[in-house]
Every structure is written in C-alpha cells, then in structure tokens.
Length: 233
Image (cartoon, rainbow, N blue to C red; front, side, top):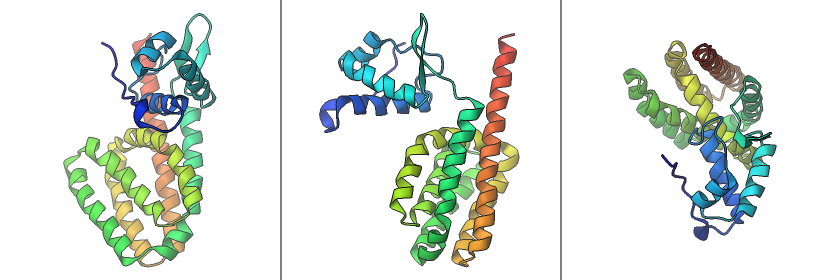
C-alpha cells in the first residue's frame, strides 16, 4: 500500500528542496518511512509532486544528518537509529536543557507555575490509567514549556531542532513501566523546586531526570535490537 506523505509546496514560501527535506525528515524520524526502506527517486518525486532535482538535494541533506545512506546496488536507504545516535542526540539535548535552568528559576512567574501544574494535573490521570500513547506527547510538552520559561531564544531554537528525535525516543523511554511513576513524581517535584527558587535542588533533580530518560531509552532500544536479532536467527 502506497504511503501517504503530506506535501503542499504551493502553500509554502521556502524553497521546495527545504520543504521536501523537512517532510522526509519528519516521516523518517516518526517511523512513517521505516528503517531499511529504499527511497526511489522517481517514486518519491511522484508522491511529493516535485521534480527529482530538489528531491536529490533533500536526500543529500538527509545523508549529512545520518538519516539515509547511499548503498551500492540499492540506492538511498533509510538508516536505523543506532545506540550511538540516540546517546549523542540525548547528550546534546540534555546539555542544552541544563543551560536553561538558572534562567528558569530567575524568570518563572506564578502564572508559569500554575500553567505547569495544570499540565501535570492532566498527566496525573493518564499516568494512573497507564495511557502511554497520550502521556508521551504531554510529557514532552511539559519539558518544552519548562525550558521556554528561560527566554533563552537562541538555545531554545537549537533545542527545538532536536525535538522530533526526542519525541520519538521519549515514547520509547516512557514505556519503561518501572520508571513511569517515578518520572512523573519528579515532574511535580521540579515545579515545587522552581516555585521555591531552589536552583541547586532544581539542577540536581533535572540532571538525574533527563539522564534517566536517556538511560531508559537506550535500554529500550537495546531490547528492540535484541528481539530483532532473535527473530532473524
């Protein structure tokens, strides 16, 4: 069955190659185009309603990102995420997030804290119900709102560039049931520490929280790879 990929170049003012790049990048990161899939130029140019030239340019950029690779006799193939990929992406994201913490403590208002607590109230019910599908994007939205309080727009833009990766990986991490309740309790404690203006406590807990998220994601990925290896033996 042919995959449906949303692409409306006439509604965008950016170059077509950039739109094609963003559309394909999103589809690869979310798994809409799975690892191992061949991206045949004629096929994807037709699906995206573009010529092959901007598609080639988009594919070259995706290759630089490490999302696709050119393989002998196969052409362009979507790469599977490796342990090193996940570790590097999380390390970058976590280091940037830690840079925002002093500004969050300094700038957080009563309204900010109330908004974060309202997010957590909604998440409470999903945690209790074990509703991972709805909880995962809300957990990411909580962290996005938290870092936005810092007002450090240059750092926030770089963090945003990693968000699509983190959204997919956090869904893997949050499925680790032994960590779910603990992680959510830490979300509540983080807001308490912001309200108390406790930078030292906030920094220590956030460092633990995001490193545990990375560890759980790596564990989930290793389990997936082990299961895949067993199925192919």
